Image: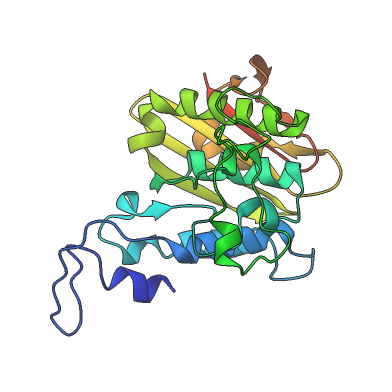
Length: 253
């Protein structure tokens, strides 16, 4: 619960006068809500409304940008297992944690789809050795030897999105404006000075066309966006098509 977490952050003015000096806390409320959102059914109160409501509590934190955000860690089922080994949902999650406010942390092996399917609660399994070329390993994730096609593609996906993020100050320091999810389309903007990045998620099993007029308060005078993942320019002045079970990252021009 953000109420509990925020109590312990530095500069929080608490009702009982307690003063903390801890600058960074782990954003478990966001981790839990977004992981559940990806695998929820489509009934009322499920899906993207959960992380939307979690982020709506950011006013409780003295500095939400200093929170640690993460899809998994050494004490919980690996993220690929959390999303039932669905690569599309997995990539949506990685895009979320790479573009959301806060400081992203990725557990080793996430970039090559390491899982804990056999026993999601087994901490020994969750902390399996990284396949780094040890004498008893059949895989070497440093050289690519023995990796499957999906593992290689996921590793490349990580490199692409994190190298894009590395020098992108709007993602590091930009303000966050989110829009309430509608028909399991959820989006938010990161804004810094004259730069803006729009991230859109479609959890549906079909492609969805969205009317961009709903977002005119931010994009009214903008006509194009650059699709970061597909590396192409697309018009945004009327509508945008978001492919099924995917996320779109647009640098707004």
